[in-house]
Figure 1 (cartoon, rainbow, N blue to C red):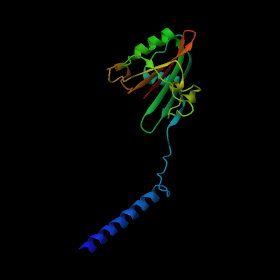
Figure 2: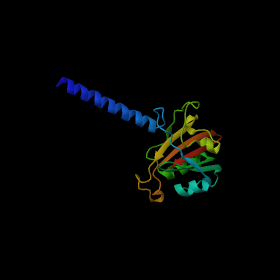
Figure 3: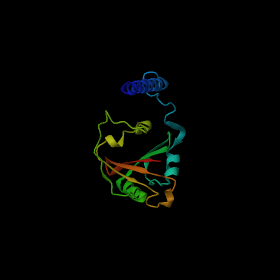
Figure 4: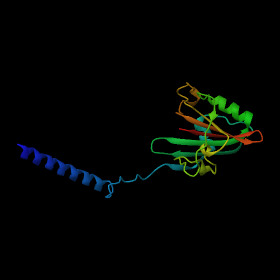
Amino acid sequence: MKRTSSLAIRTASAALTALLALSATACGGSGAPKSRSGGPVWAEGQGATEAVGFMRVQTPAGAAEMKGAVQHGFQDTTYLLSFAASTGDAEAFVADLRPEEALRANIPRDSTTYTTITPWSHLGLPEPETQQKVRTASVCPPCIKDERRSAVQSITIFVQDIGDGRARVYLKAF
């Protein structure tokens, strides 16, 4: 009886090893999974106008340096919007978004190691997460029943003090 169970264990072990080898070969030969192609892509010709339209926001009349982009990803389309305005206008703009909590200080991340799939560098801007004097919050329009933005699932907000009574607003939405 011992001999039969030992033979069964060795046979099962050999079959499992063969299956794992076949699985590794199917994933690229080296045992590593194949990388996916067709990752997130920036939509050509789409920018601030499309981001404003999707987020259904009205930027302050004195807003300058308006930049935007649209990125189609695996599951979601992400909209980026940034502009500079007076600190008062930026604060009023953010209040209209109705974040769940007050803007809080952002602890800057190391710019040499921080990466993101939707980089602000696409717009020639630094990553707000890596900058000094940045406050952040988020808003879930469906959670707060903001019918104006019913198609928007989430907006991440960054506000950076850029001096002289001005602020740069960064919005990332999907």
